Amino acid sequence: MTETLAWVRHVSLAAITAFIVGPGTTAFAQQQLPSAVAAPAIPDAAASDPVALGWMVGTPPPAEKVIRQSDGSFYRFPRTRWSFSHWRELFPTAHVSRGDGPVAPLPRAPTAADLESISFTPGTGGAPMTFAQALQAVYTDGVVVLHRGRIVYEKYFGALDETRPHIAFSVTKSFFGTLAAMQVAEGALDENAPVSRYIPELAQSGFGDATVRQVLDMTTALDFTEDYADPKSSFLEYARAAGMFKRPPGTTGPDDVYSFARTIAKSGPHGERFTYRSPNTDVVGWLVARAAGNNTRPEAVLQERLWSRLGAEGDAYISVDPAGNAAAAGGLNVRLRDLARFGEMMRLGGKFNGRQIVPAAVVERIRQGANREHFAAANYQTMRGWSYRDQWWISHDDHGMFMARGIHGQAIYVDPKAEMVIARFSSAPTASTVTFDPIVLPAYRAVAEHLMTMEQ
View (cartoon, rainbow, N blue to C red):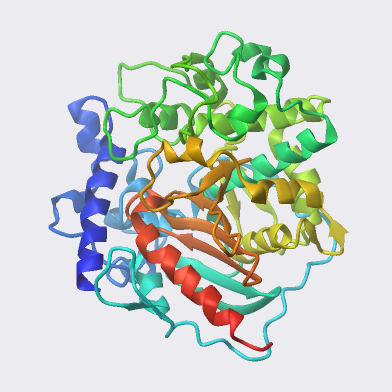
């Protein structure tokens, strides 16, 4: 256990330092550098608890407890443990209504499942861990476990509770990928057509001759790197265009995600390998809106086709860039149980809340996955044999498990064989979800196997 946590903290420190600082002037690096960088180890979940640390408490809060977007403090660990649960207080968002229908029930199982004591061995080896220890190791803000549509476990930590939305980051991608997959099935999008047919503004960019399918499955060849541990990665400039971080004084660049997409050049032939790049999903959101017609916005399609039909407990919100464009790649803010509802809908083949929300054939095609050789080229050590289809991560394991994944530990884990869905929000200090896969993937599998033995 100690060795595992030490490894996590080491990777976390390097990753968050590089991601926050990124390229830029020395002054900017000093401004954005997390205070934790000078410390020998990042504080654990208990020591970084946002309630115990008193962030943003008081009117006004003490100066040392204030968290702002403008100075980058919102993204300095451990302040992130507060800001991820208060995103709408820091960034502009667009409203995604739940509609006026009744809430779809998520009943509680009559017998509570003792999940916290379930033991498993992390993928890094070493001593066994319990599920309760795993939740702390990955800085969990909230977790809900559904078995056969009933809540068997639910717990919140720190600043999150059952009524508060939390930023879902790249879990958002799976929502828009599902919408696009529905439009492909309906004929509104031709998956073999070039992106430029629907978005002529991208004709001269690297996206211009990529097909809709290549964008959906991220097999585009683009001059863009998304490496959170590399200070020279393109990702920080992209985050600035999205309005997440301030641009250093004296520098220029695109100031919205669609303008940024137009600057990305092609780098090799499309369709040969999977490479994870968030701008693909901005284009997916753009495609979804164009295919819907009538000058529709991406968040409006999300509301009409998915969110208003789920029987969600609360409205959703999606971050917008400086030009008001919805952040399809990672801006969704929702309640945890509603995230679980979306996962349960996908587990049930698109049928939930008394209606077929997503065609069963669309869900089945997503679950079948994509080309595993293309995915293998990305060399994810923790996801051997997986693939990526319609913005979902497909394991191809004996349980048919598939996932939506977001940085800092956001996840929807769908295990059809175990009839289980896990939704989790987290505020882990490292951005890359792969960092914690050796803990969370075996932990979730252990929970699934335990639930399969239970009679309910």
